[in-house]
Length: 249
Length: 232
Image 1 (cartoon, rainbow over the protein chains, first blue to last red):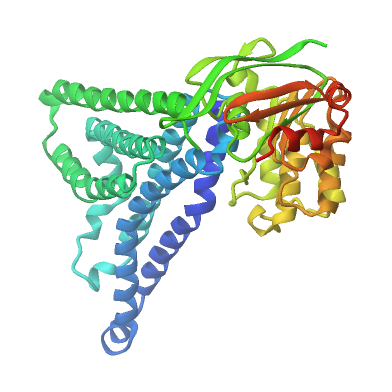
Image 2 (cartoon, helix red, strand yellow):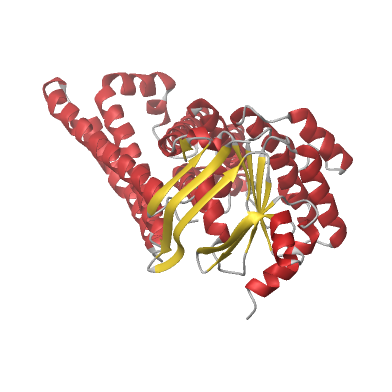
């Protein structure tokens, strides 16, 4: 039944946010085509303005997409379990833990699809001739470089996955507490916390990990990752317990 | 006939306010039971407990001999008093969902009923009118070969013609060996189809019996008995 739940959770994300990924990659492609403009066009007409505008949109979207994904995960969890939709969700012949796990996995998948879309956009842009227009070291963002980066930092990737699971479970738990105990405002607080974590803590943490993990430190990192996953699991069981015992829709 | 529902000593409170107090109730299979009572009497709470949406504070509930859980949800078809269909789905998506999760869902029957109602399978559910959305809910619920149908106010807020359609759909689509528990205020409309009556007030059962026995005992219709029992 978990696979069936997952099917509908992923379908929801695809129908809601899928178009955004296509738009993002489309803008990256248009931006790459714009780099083929002659120097004359860029310097003396509106070509330069159009280029910078598209570049800004691409830059903003690259930051906005992960935030929208988290916000959409929260919305899906809240609507599907604690709004009128819950009358269907909670009467499906599945245990409540599968409902939560399905949403957690779907959110993680959606986050990875989002990052894949962002990287695809960056790769398309890095293959263009944008270096001659703006001062960016685009050659360093090549596909090969990105793959090598992940190969060399598998532990950092594991930590990021664990952190994402923790972020999503924190959000789910806060939403559940708010719904079961009818607390006002906690949802906004939770979303602000997630927003803050996503914008500041996670990139900072990832940067530290990418920069400092070496062969000697992997055991410490393994313990750290296990700790994060353990906390996430604790939150998962607490959320399940609250839904089982105190569901109030 | 065998016992399908057994509610034993069940109590449920919202915050500190009791919604149901020490309820004992047994319903047999193959019966249509009307759950009657004024607003706030505990009808919806009882139906939610049977559907697994709520957990009792005290007491036990079994359906077909099983405690309420995924196994009982597979044999219970529940029509709540509100819209449960996700707005982002098309009509065909919600049929797929029911087919995926409920082994007893009869897709051909559902599609046939929707065709007669002129509801297109490709339309998004948010584009349906309120009346058609209510009919879609009913079609989904009654297209299951469930052992127990829980219908919470199925004919509330609809015009008399739609009421007839809903009641006819219920009567013509359920397996006679199944049980229907239906809450309503509109007793006159359902009087012709009910076998048993449960009257509930302030979280307690006030009257429970076969509809014919009650009519004979009081010499009145169920509607008149209801008015007498709940006279303000």
